[in-house]
Length: 145
Image 1 (tube, rainbow, N blue to C red):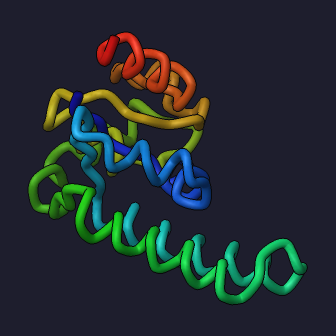
Image 2: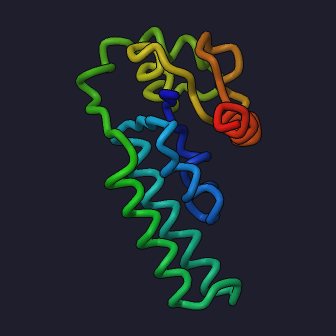
């Protein structure tokens, strides 16, 4: 299954063991934009730092999660350069009027004819199919069974 992964999913799932395992599932081919990678790396660092400073994680565990997450970003996600989808910027912005800053996710989904893995309701009605983590997990279990 080919999916475009939104930032909110990457950040949330890369902080979870379940999510890190899911992103390595061989049944999934996950695509991201350069902007998504940049936002995700920034947010992951911020959240891990916050979790360590609040005592929710030890420094070592936080560093381990961050290293594993960065490894997944580098090796398990397919990075697509903006030049491949930038010609659809206007169309994509028109399809996501509540959050036009997410145009690149919609444009990539349009150019690749792929669904978006997200928990962000702003993508509803953009003309691209969307998957939630829960639905994806159920579908993968059905496929394996």
